[in-house]
Image (cartoon, rainbow, N blue to C red; front, side, top):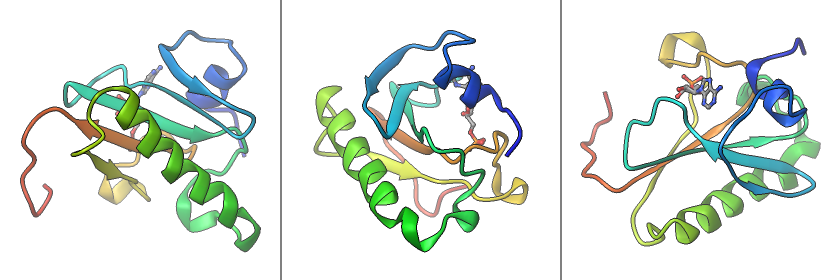
Length: 113
Ligand code: AMP
């Protein structure tokens, strides 16, 4: 996988407002927040998009979700938050390093736009 802005954040080549880090993932505030809470959780393993995750990534993918839940709790939005994974340019993926958006703190419509 080629280098992305997110791998540069993992490697501390560029700054980010990091709210969580462990051996498997990193969570940091989105630079263009779409809600009062807008945080991205990314695996340290370079997976470009969900469709390319492998069967042996199962535990890692679960870890991303449980981390997202904990981050939402830490931010004070543990009771109501939305998780989004854009997979593919056609649905809005712009950074090709897997990431889970955690959004909260305002009303959200359904279906999503
Ligand atoms: P997506 O469109 O699903 O690929 O989401 C990529 C997200 O990364 C967007 O919401 C961007 O605002 C966010 N983003 C891009 N560059 C940075 C950065 N340097 N620090 C934090 N968030 C970023």
